[in-house]
Length: 154
Length: 154
Length: 154
Length: 154
Image (cartoon, rainbow over all chains, first blue to last red; front, side, top):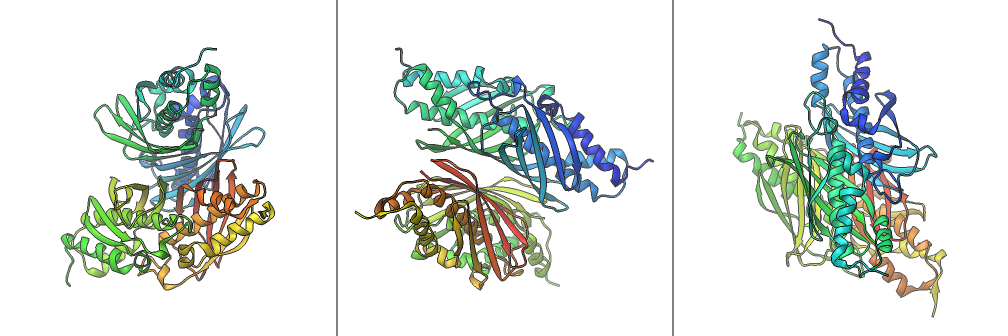
């Protein structure tokens, strides 16, 4: 039976977040950079992501989604990187059991912009639970939102 | 100049959340019930709202969006209900300045289901800031998520 | 070797929170009621618990402490109640590894009063992580604060 | 009537947090550095601040208190710095109305140490609401906890 090496675990997670999650595609999230210490994703403004119709700014739910995905991506990747080589099905099962426990979003400024970048890094690692901090900026590097997520990773 | 009475302010907010926000339509959120003490919204499961492709459950971002909208709806409505009659443009401007300050989501159980109901009620009222608690259940009344949101309302 | 039965696990946790934690004694927290689904603790107003010297209200840190302890008490108790009989040392070790992962406090009204009651109940159970919601009221049943805590329990 | 200039507003806030709050003295919090963009406070380990009696680590409530005070200090200071000169009584009244709306604490590592430093900086400014991020380190620069606080400042 073919095993997937830890070195390739990351590709599986990136694939999941990039292609596997239907709602990520609705937002248009793209994984730009990805390793066990940080993740960087981008998405482009489009009419269906608008919340406030007068100000034409991002919906708070779009911001929460982008932050949650960036936090999940980095904590899931870090957890998989510590696991041994395993068959693909087992890897998928482990990944399917990982989930967000809680998420906090601090909305700092209105979500104006054309292209958005969300970054994440781990602030607490563990075999069962990991915590990440996330940030959302627009193309002018305006800091739009902060996030903190606690994730089940084992 | 025609003024909108406080009694009709609620209809304006309901209209905004029901029709005005593009991303609410992506989720398919419908305002079912609405008064200054609580709001009830529903949405129906559909393929593009899926997060985990193995378990076919709601994306955490969809849950965060639904909770945020329910909290905003009730806190914005309560704030407008306390304001005097005013012209529509002024009402729209006031509404456009209301926003989420921060949001916390506690994911309790996987988001399985066919139809989802999100309810909200106010736990702190004020002329500037209001706080709401929100809950998401599926059609079998399984409690899927809790939320707490702090909103700028004046 | 003598084992402590699950039926007696609760007493160990109550003892820890009632007597074992030095800072709980600073606040004056007393465990009034305790079972694996909920906890109730009380404490009495005293000068050293004051924050705002003009309004003579509870310090926000006192409120956060009381909420955190109530949440830890119920989630730790529920986790121990599910474990088999074990020697006291092992029980203590398990208890010592339990901890707060994150805590959110919503301050609803000024902390006026003579006697305060903090209650907690579990909203998410698990073998590794549990989440509790907590409330603080004064002797007139004024609702002063809400809390949500995520705890490592295994 | 003598007015207190904005340049001296900071001293009033520092005095309040350093001397005026009874519970701050229980913890032993000392204001080390203070300006409208950041605050730095320290406190020393002592037996009554212990939570877990086996591990001899800081009680989670002590950590929450220190983080909350550091966040309040910087956001209150920034708000006062923007206000005009005013009589002392008016300044005290304004300060007395400032308060924590909500607080989130992420406990990253056990609270071991002899001396603790808590720092804060503002991530959202406003005339009504401000948001700060806080960090707690021990004397070996081990990062023990993160905090985020939303404060009513006007």
